[in-house]
Image (cartoon, rainbow, N blue to C red; front, side):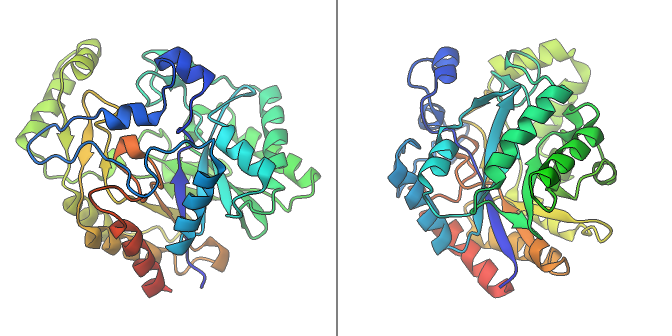
Length: 370
C-alpha cells in the first residue's frame, strides 16, 4: 500500500499561560466550540465531540486514543501545527509530551503556522497578540530546534528527508536563503536533506509556480481556499461582496466584527467544481480534503461549508488519491483538514451528530484506491 493520508492536528486543547492572559483563565478551544450558536434554521451548531468528550491534551491516554482511532481508519500520521515566534513556542505541550514519553507510537510531521497571533485567529494585523519577526539568527536557532525533532524515529520522512510544511511562505523575507540555510544545517546534522512544502491557501501572495521556484519541494493545496469557492453565489453572498468593495475597509471590518453575517457555500458544489479542475503535472502538489467547514465558533461573520453527506467527501478524497497515484511512491500523499479543528467545524474525530461516518468514508476511499 503506497498512498497515504496525513491529517492536520491542532494542539490547542489545554490551558496555557498566554491564552489565560489573552482570553481568560482556563480558556481552550472548547470554550468557543461549546458556545457556538446556529446562524439559521437547521444550522448544525454547536459541534459536540462524541468518543473522547471535551478532552485535555495534557492527558497521555487521550493522545493514545486519538492515535489508535486514526490508525484504525487508515490514517498514516498527524501533521501538528507548530507555533514559533523568535524562539518562543506556543501550544507546545502536547508535542513535548509525545517527544518525552515516546508515546503514542504514531507518525507525525510539523507545519509551521508562521502567522501573527491575533484576536481574529487569521494572522491579520488588526490586533496582534504575538508578532512574527524574521532574522538570520532566528532562522539558525529555529532549524537547530527542528532538527532535534526530525531525529525522532516517528517523524515522517519522504525519501529519507524530514517532511516540513510552511503555512505562509510569502510572509518570510529572503525565504530562498532561509531554505538553503535550513537544508545545509540539516545535512550537517546527518540528514539526507529536508522535504519542504509551501502551503497555497488563497491568502498566500505567491503562485504555485513561484513557491516551487523559491526552493520548495512541493506545494500543499490547503483547503478551504476562497479561490476555489463555487462561481455561483447566493444573493446574500453577492450583497456581502458588494459591501466589501464599496465600503472603506475599516467600516467593513467593523461590520464583520459587530454585526452577525455569514457566508454559506454549498459543499457539494464546492467539491464538484474542485474535482473538475486539472491537477498539476509539472510539479508535486499535494491535495487537501476536508469533510466540512464552519468557523461559527470563532467568528462573528463565519464562512459555512456545511456537509452531512460522507459520500461526497469520499468522492473528493478518492479523486485526490487518484491525483497523486503517478507520483513517486513516497510522495503519494493526501492531507485531510483536519483531525480536530472543532472550532472550524472541520474534524474527523467523531461528533454526536455524525459519529464515525467521515472516518469510515476515509478508510473506504483509501482501501479502494490502494
